[in-house]
Image (tube, rainbow, N blue to C red; front, side, top):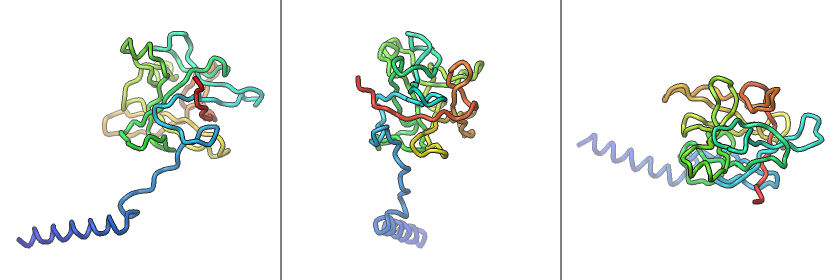
Length: 197
C-alpha cells in the first residue's frame, strides 16, 4: 500500500513539474537548416544541393553519373545538370523541418525509380567508398551541420551504423579527384536551393 502511494505521489510531482516548467521536460529543438533564401528546409520538399567551385567563379550542384538515376554514383557537376533531392528524418518526426545535426536520409527525387521499386536513397558504396544510390532506411544516415569556417554554408556528413546498437562517428562528405561525393576527403561546403520545377 505504501509503495502505491509513493508511486502515485511521484507521478503527480513529475506531472506538476512537467506542466509548470516545460523546459525541464522538453529539450529545445536544434536550429533549422535554412535554404539560400533564409527559409527553413522542409522534409520531403525538393531542393538542389549547390556548392561554389574551388575558384569561386561558378556554382556547382549535385547530380548523378547517368541518365538512369537508379544505382548511379553521386557527383558534383554544373548547375544546369543538377538533380533535385529530398531530405527525410531517419527518426520519425512530426516537425516537418530539417534540423542541424539530426539524422537524415537523402534521396534523388526520381519517380521512375520509385515506380520500379528501386531506391534513389544515398549510401556509401563499400568497395569504392563513394556516395551512390540504392540505400536502405536506417543504415544510410547523413547529417547536416553548419560549417565552422563560414556560417553561410553547411557541411554534409555520412553517419554509418555498423551494428543495430552501434553509432559510429560521422565523417564529412567531400568531392574526390573524379568529382564523386565521398567520405573523408575534406568537407564540401553546400547550400540548399529550392527546386523551381
